[in-house]
Image (cartoon, rainbow, N blue to C red; front, side):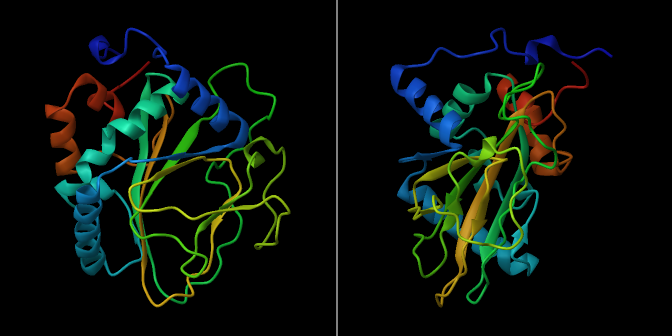
Length: 248
């Protein structure tokens, strides 16, 4: 099946600065990364307003196909501080897996431990493809505290050859990430993680952008009017991110 070869990057991997190399090594070892100054205070406020309006329309704590909700979410697709690091880890052939948001209400209980990847991964690697196959990026629009429920991870668990335990028992090396607005939190889709209970009196808001290798199937169809416009008018990089490839 024919496709536009110009969409495919000429180089599979970008050149990395020493700082990016250190971040990649940290991520590959521990399965997470905190990115400072990922979005500006003005962008935080814009996302808060857009998400509040989407939450009011949808009447659901989960919002799927986030890029179709409002034009103000569009810049997250290839937000430079995040996307540069995504390519550093995954290579230049990157596709969006999904764009979602979650508004966690007061009184929400502890989530169970889980992985986002639906299939097992050999911790020693695979002969084809790449590891990681999926990376989540969370933009937390409210400062996370022990009261409103931070994201909890088990560093290094993305290499575990077993499923997360049922429920949310305590791991001796679990880590509570007290993310701040403006930061972005990367985590490998196979990392054991969960959201802690929201025992505060306010909502906890987050936008989640998930990326993967471009030759993997995405979760979203990328066929809504806003995404179609972004893909049509975007760069080759945007086209690749939004699945503008009929074959490899």
